[in-house]
Amino acid sequence: MKFAFKSIVVATAFVAAGAANAASATLVAEGPGANGFAFVSGGGTLTFSQTLIDALNTGGVQVVAAGGAQSNIVGDPGEYTAVGVTANVSSITIGDSGTGLVQQAQSVGGATQIAGAVKGVSYGGTISVTNLRIDMVNKNIYADFVGAGKNSTGATVNVNASNVLAWTFSDVTGPAALGEVATTIGQEVSAETVLSGLSLTTEGFNHLKNGLGLYSIGLIALQGASTDFGTLTSTLNVVAVPEPSTYALMGLGLVGIGFAARRRAAK
Image 1 (cartoon, rainbow, N blue to C red):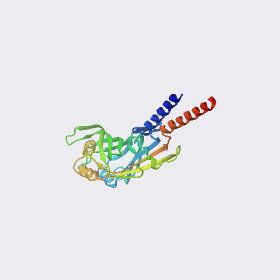
Image 2 (spheres, rainbow, N blue to C red):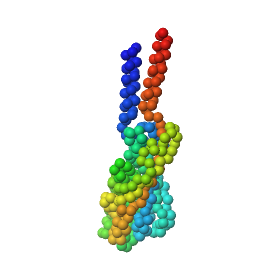
Image 3 (cartoon, one colour):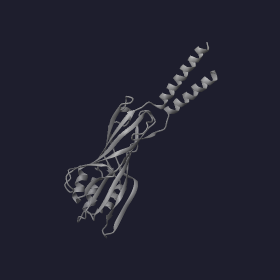
Image 4 (cartoon, helix red, strand yellow):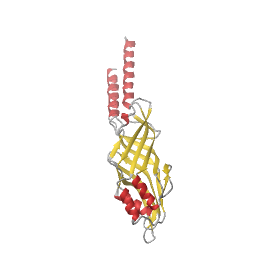
């Protein structure tokens, strides 16, 4: 009996230790929890800077939400005073430290920009930028680019690129770890983080240029906005849940109680 009990104790201890040192986990919205947290829902809002809005207004570029995203746009094309697009966050990846350090977030949907032919600005075209993947560790933002624009010869230039490094960001405001806000088991809370200092990469710039058919003044306007693109605000609704190690320790306790009861019964 001693051997059996010791075996159970050792096995349970290994389960607890293994759970405590689990790898990073990807949590999906409304899915099961892991590493101490469950992800309920979330959204990521890209708010265009005034510099970028001015660039859009230069060519009368229209912005609409795409892929199920929602837009918050004030004004008509060419006269925008505010542009923002909110996409649903479908999953997040958190670290294994037990603090819920957010390593990555994936959104679905985005925005479509439509440019007409404007002399000195654009030959005309359309580009959709969707499915942002935010790498919090390296401060990179990836996206899918799909569209087609005209060039100086009138030919169509197609754009179809997935998971492109589109922006980098320099500053993060707000909690970086879920454990900073989700402290009570079972209580849903919101964690809001603002990413600023968004800079358009060369590849991202080229996809926008080709998709919108930009030239001359259009290129200058986009170049001016490339280091002042806007901000990305992420809102995550999460719940703290018991760690697997907690259940393992509970199991160990029940085993101990059962063993003590059997010893008393044997006496």
